[in-house]
Length: 299
Image 1 (cartoon, rainbow, N blue to C red):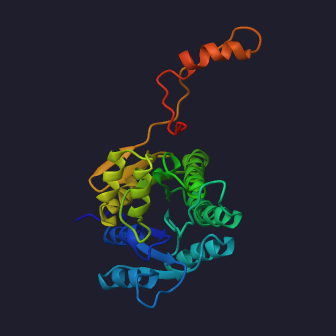
Image 2: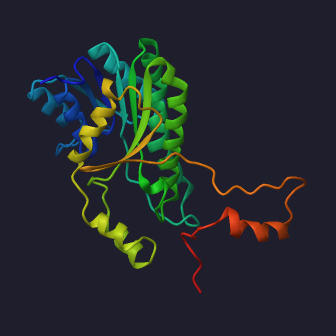
Image 3: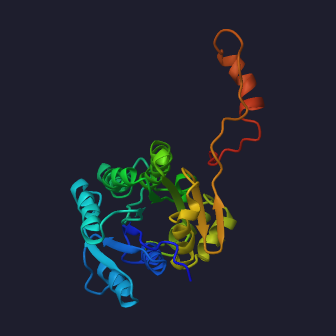
């Protein structure tokens, strides 16, 4: 069987367990040499060393790297490790995350906001910063950023939602800057069980009327992380060379692409500036046609 990543070198952050581990194992099966990563060793296993050992025991090539990539120099070091051990970097999967504190906006401490942004968004940027130049010079590369539907619909997590939305903005601009060099940058929103899965959060949100019953039931039936791996590997293969700057949803056997943002229902005034009374007349009828308030006030 042809291995679609034969000869490629992949860095996968946050690959000690969960989705990152599943992706690392799948890429190794497809021929990639893999640098696995998480912050620190875990005495009970489920860390970068454990994943690397699984790969090597199956005849693959892997190296474990412990460190927090939200630190700029640590991100540099993981890229240097890949080059030193395997000669280059072809693939970067930014999957590292953390335990994100939850709170409504008016109660969230600044440190919780900053920690989440640093862990997810700054961590992804740091790795891209150090790996993308190498990919540009070799005229081949794949960057995959992990995001979440939280940027569309979540509660009590302004920090996490902002980080996830920021990753999409980062993905789209990196794709446009680097695509001409044969490098792609995409994002994927996985729906899979991880150690941070919190069903109770969604039970509270449903009880409070903040999410639909359909979404609540979806969270009660979360698939295993292995369901995400094949499509991530596909996006990192030569077969996906013309897929760039896109955001995908992955839910086991269900894969979707998020629509491109468009401006709709435009209202234009031919001369002068809008007055308040004119806006009162035109906004509900044209600009907000079919609009539904996602969080209407309660009496």
